[in-house]
Image 1: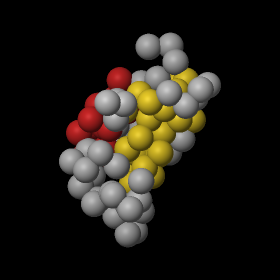
Image 2: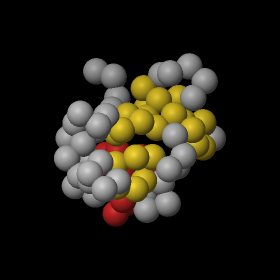
Image 3: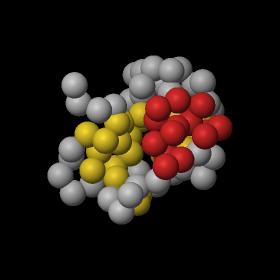
Image 4: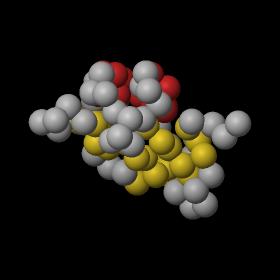
Length: 77
C-alpha cells in the first residue's frame, strides 16, 4: 500500500462489537467502557487495519491519508 494513515474511532458510534480487535489485535483495543481505540493513530497503511474498519458494523472507524486527509475508509460517496 505504501501510504501513511491516520486512524480514528468515533466514540459516539462505537458499540463495542470488538470486530476491530478480532481483525487487527495489534492495532485496536477496547477500554473498560468497551469503546475501541487505535493503538497507533498514525500508522503505515495496513490491510488488517482496513479489514477492521470494513468489519465495524457501525462504521465507527475512520481512516484518512496522513498527508492530506483524503478518505480511505469509509470511502467518500
